[in-house]
Amino acid sequence: MESVSVRWWIFFLILIIALVVTELKIAPPQVPETVFFILLDDKGNPVEGATCKADMEQNGKTWEKSFDNLKVTDVIDPYVYNIPVDKGLYVLTTDLKSPREFSIKIVCINPDNQGVASKVIDQDHIPCDLREGGKLLVC
Image (tube, rainbow, N blue to C red; front, side, top):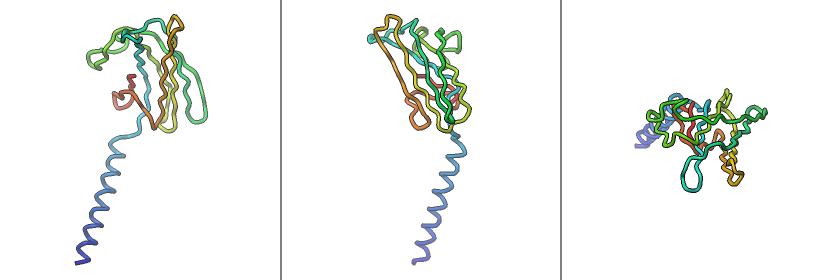
């Protein structure tokens, strides 16, 4: 009776290990190559002309990059990616190479200097929509 119980535990343990290994192989770590940041005011209207910058860190190196203020249609088809606005979109190419230990700190200041929006993204906390297998991030 005990040998049957031990066999089931061994089978269950092997099954769990196989599932974990399979998940790690299927879902590789993700690093966003492009970040689309949608900036809205208090009323939910897109904000154009804001200044957006990102401080990025990876492998002990830190650098700052500015976002490009573009229309969605300049970059992608908004209907394919279901992006709700065609203005107020800021685009950042991250230059991140590895999914290990990265950090992106985004800060946007409205053109009238009345409002600030910020977001922090790292390998453990990605509060935005990942698309294209993790290469595209929509916030």
